[in-house]
Image 1: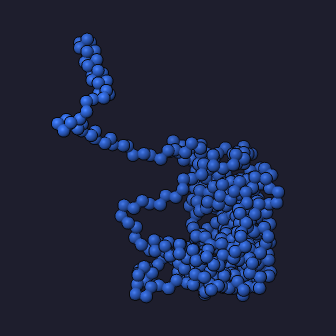
Image 2: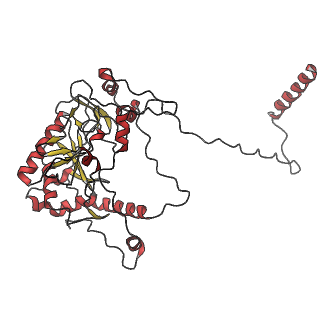
Image 3: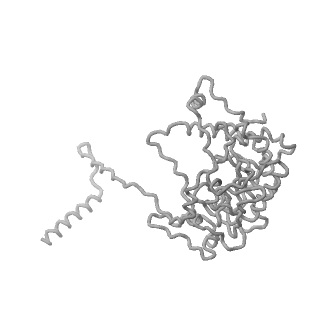
Length: 384
């Protein structure tokens, strides 16, 4: 039996070798070999990250790194050493969403917020600041809400005035900021007033401010009303449009002078942003508004966003920041994600600070996409 098996094996191997030799030229009578059936490929599963997911680890740190204060890396790819917490109550401010534990920053940011709150109340009649997300205790990527805010130099400030009383912890969790928008393209003049213009002007006026981000419709209103807040309108150049900033504005400071390893954003060009940039943003707003009001196509691929940052994407010093003081990051599970402690779960469970962007009504959508007269958009160049 063994001999028979070996003999068959030799015949088969000899046939395979013969198949590799060049054959005679084909003629009309010579049939072409049949094409092999295509192989079925197994569905590819996304590879597991080779490095731990950074947001799982930094989101679990409830205390700051006991190191000298330092912003490490860039606004969207870095961490914070020696973070300092903004007191939840000040003479001219209150911190919101306390359960998120995101009222941390570089001392440079705290000095700025305290001065802005004082100046806005004394010089511009603003009742006081409601401060939203700053950074986590050790900075780094967040579990929810932001791609920046990683180095302790960013802060969200609500456009809702501070009440004339101390809010309770539950009110700070439940209170919803007021949207400034009437529709996807326009601010509501009954809500967005000259006081808001003066507040944003004051926020942009300090030399350590690199950028302030607002919704494009708010940028348009600022371009139109800036002269009413004062003759100097050069501050407009620091205020740039960005998605979803319709109920708050986002302040970004430059790195402290002489800071090693802190990466500044490119300085503004001097353009006030009221021309072509605003025109381009309104073109994008139109597309976004139509997409939001249109039912998704059957079988369309859902938006998944970029893969999360891993520790390998961050500066090496962030590993030291993360583990300093004996902090032990959560151990990754078999599913590839980290066990979330109660602090991280609390951050995930908090409500969004503000309402969503307004969506076009069916009538507005029809007018915008081909009605008889079309839905008029706001003037895309308010200086024209």
